[in-house]
Amino acid sequence: LAWATPEACKISTASGKTLSLAGALGIASDITINGALSVIGNLNLGGANVTFTDATNFAGTTGNINFSGADITINNLKVDPQAPAESVHFNPAGKVTYAATCSSMLPGTYNDLIINTETKKNISLFDDVTVNGSLTWAAGRIALSGSKLTVSGTFSGNYTSDHMVIMSGNSQLAYQNNTGSAVSGLELKMPVGTFSTTSMGEAQYYYSPATLSDLSEIASNGYVAVSVKGEALRGTTSDLVRYWTISSSNADMTGSLAFTYDDADDINGYGTSEKNYWSVLHKVGDTDIHDESNHSPYNDNTINIASGKICGVWTAIEYPEVVTLYSYNTGDWGVSTTWTLISTGSVYENPTGRVPGPKTDVII
Image (cartoon, rainbow, N blue to C red):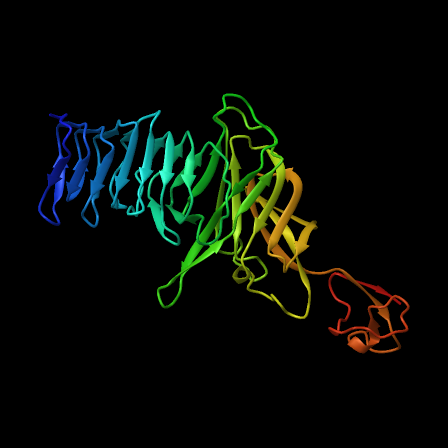
């Protein structure tokens, strides 16, 4: 069956019911669908506008939906997260726009994708999406529910907790090299973050981007992927309550890394009198690589790794700043008035009451 007239097509079913398409239907004009849509046959949509009206309006497909139009706008889409949607296809040279009324996106491979999400609003993705052309996304948040978003371009813009890619489950944000040849020296800012829910049921969003710089060679069709979780890697209170995982088609990829975290991620001692530092913890497989020489001040909300292999899991561990204490006068070893931070050993300065301990050098 084909609908080739220039007039818009409207398909309706009773409220709360699902419209099941078992045969083949081609519609070349705009279409409005009143009711939830389930496709077990073949549906070809070639018009410029596809509009849904029901609250949850895409009930999945075990058949095929082909968006063959060159410039399609999808309005008011809300996908059932449990619905199968493996066979959604888009024009490989076309453009798809999700209007601000959409709360979900369809999975599949896009050429150019425009997401017009409103500020502080989320658009959800329940299955994998690949963007081979350009991604235009000026506001709002893309929520990945265990899914993977792969892009062929780099992210640029002002990202915040109101404008980021939200990670949950095994979500990933990936860059894929579609240039046709190997590239190196790239800088990739991956605008990722997480959310949690308060006891009052309110969502709290945490922006924690990863910046990858001076990357070694990414082969044609190769990729680099980042994920982040808002929990301690080892479950200990000395760990930062956040960790990032980097994977790549090149397991030996090298580069520089910078991770940003929120004050709320530091649950053990932020603002206390003892100044601590973050030591980098890099986990590759079952091996922990703990590098105390590679550290950052613990209250600047960043973890920096100058250079090295980037694949694996990254977080930080608190450890005391290395200090030198000098004897001030005769006294007890464990009493602060015995020690000074002044190298002459004759002037008392020990405002935080330090005594010798781990990470302390002593000169008598």
